[in-house]
Image (cartoon, rainbow, N blue to C red):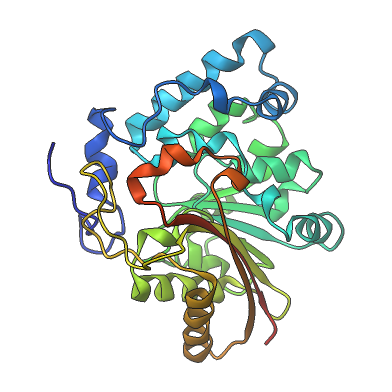
Length: 318
């Protein structure tokens, strides 16, 4: 197997080489050939009710979409089919998020949205789609339309999607351009500077070291509208060492200096972010076991016994 690196493949992008290299093989620790035990009654119900997938087609449909997603990028969230389970509803802030989106005209951006599973759950739970934005560095968005069969429904018509790199965000200047369609197709992250009430950032920060996480979080801060804005999400954390160490050759993080937080280091990082942005935030974070999040702990052996999921809510107060 080729030696992998977590360094940028090209200058100015945070795309990882391993996520491209492994698309040619499934002989990796984070690809499950059998997903049947992950297809819970809740997942079936959602695909049947929201996606309108016939009951007898659900299982085959899931495997087919997972295969297509793997050819785009070999992510652990694809190999484990984590996209089947929206993570945002597990947040302690979820009921508040629903209230703000339904009744207070709040806006939400999902940074690292993948196929849009969290955003679709919000729409299913009654949130207006025109208040939602999805962003990712690589397009799995179109595959989401195939998975949920909703391109011609309110989600497909009104949710905004853009491609950008949160580590190297861009702004597109439109000048006097009056073509609304052209504008929508060319939006970048920083076009939403100061516009977002709620920012969802799940499964992204654990890819980077401390300095790059600070850099990314400063971008998230820039997106926030002001006091009462919140940043929510989850990422791999640790009860032990914060710097990742290799546990097997298939571990995509094995050669990197990724920083995996506990609640104390998470707070320390936000102290730095406050100082560098001139803002104030209240942080809440908790390490959860994989079982608590509905995942099978044994699947994650390759990242070590200390690995947990860090669930967080950060609220802006100034």
